[in-house]
Image (cartoon, rainbow, N blue to C red; front, side):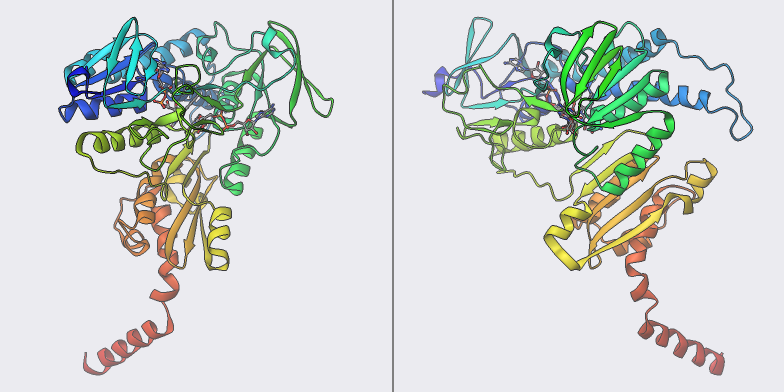
Length: 475
Ligand SMILES: Cc1cc2nc3c(=O)[nH]c(=O)nc-3n(C[C@H](O)[C@H](O)[C@H](O)COP(=O)(O)OP(=O)(O)OC[C@H]3O[C@@H](n4cnc5c(N)ncnc54)[C@H](O)[C@@H]3O)c2cc1C
Ligand SMILES: NC(=O)c1ccc[n+]([C@@H]2O[C@H](COP(=O)([O-])OP(=O)(O)OC[C@H]3O[C@@H](n4cnc5c(N)ncnc54)[C@H](O)[C@@H]3O)[C@@H](O)[C@H]2O)c1
């Protein structure tokens, strides 16, 4: 296509975490960017995902404290949950963060915004609201939607997903949560703490991508809160609004007033002209290479719509990678060596790099595990939050992964990620001077434990004894 027929340098479709980062980055580098969105700016994370769910979890934490009775000499007697107030907090959190993702901010950066549903009409042309845009590079940042399993009768029931959960007009009295991934676990505990009777149904393992010891600790804490866990696959749903019965594959029947379907995500990208262009799809999303290029190399796919990890920080990382790739021609590949994620249950379940199981598959007997317990950390003791552990997964003294379960686990991941990538070493982490009392000391102690046998080894002791002997003799 001759250059004068291009309306833009790049067209970005989707204004969620991935698309906003890609579009903003390209615009800041001076490219002429078209940004297309047919719903609310901010996408899933801001409107139906991370932000409302974390706001709900914060309200649930307060409710839980209230219910626990007197602790540390302080009683919160008479604490009450007002669902209207909880929703107001959720909405205020979204509204406070929304300016960050506001169309005006991206216009100010230099993006031209188009409202409507985009469709590819050719390898370099996009149609939106009756207009045809053309660019030599296109970025698909389309996101994903709830994957609803084929459960007989479910479609005729008013079931919940993350897309309508945060608009409920009252707290569900008996909530069935289908799926024990991050969404199911976080929401099951939050609603239980807010006062719903909650049953979580999982067909396989809860938090299946996480360390088994961490997942077991989180499950035990949730059971202590009152969440009931049931193993099985839902096969049939019956009832009406407010009275729902799910039948599992073993015949068990679970009853509730509401059902939340949290059984994973389905990547978007169907029916917008990609198949007609011959684009290749993976098992759940557009197939991409390490630079996030699709089978049509001038079209990139980033964030939830491509096959791969689905997290906001991953969406942002891929958005900035393709902005560099497109704007400066720097081939920027993704690197998952120190990919972190955290599930915000109480206790939180954080992971970075390899789990023990993955490390053993790669490194076999060379894997060494160091555990540090939160109960040995003074800050955790003074705050009465002693459940949890840090598990460092090492090959020799090189950190290859870390699993943390405990209060503030997510905030502990940064130095561990830097240590895995080699930007710091376990010795640097283990010998750092850090503020007391903080949970950072747990990571420091774990990293130092890797060096302890060497630091206090026989040769080093011999040096110390020789020095002591000299000192006794000569002063
Ligand atoms: C309940 C919940 C909680 C979560 N919590 C966390 C968390 O704590 N931490 C974390 O890291 N991740 C979390 N996630 C995951 C995170 O929300 C997603 O990984 C992230 O938002 C994906 O961003 P994205 O840009 O790929 O997609 P999206 O944010 O979905 O953006 C895609 C955009 O594209 C638009 N679009 C699609 N097709 C078209 C079209 N044809 N034309 C025009 N526009 C189009 C959509 O309207 C949408 O706005 C959570 C997810 C859920 C469901
Ligand atoms: N804190 C976070 O970072 C966070 C929070 C929420 C969501 N997310 C992201 O959002 C995405 C979606 O999360 P999710 O929890 O919906 O998906 P998921 O894939 O993590 O978990 C879905 C679970 O549902 C189970 N399941 C599927 N069908 C079932 C059936 N018929 N009966 C019983 N169980 C069934 C699966 O075995 C699986 O364990 C994930 O990619 C996750 O990374 C992240």
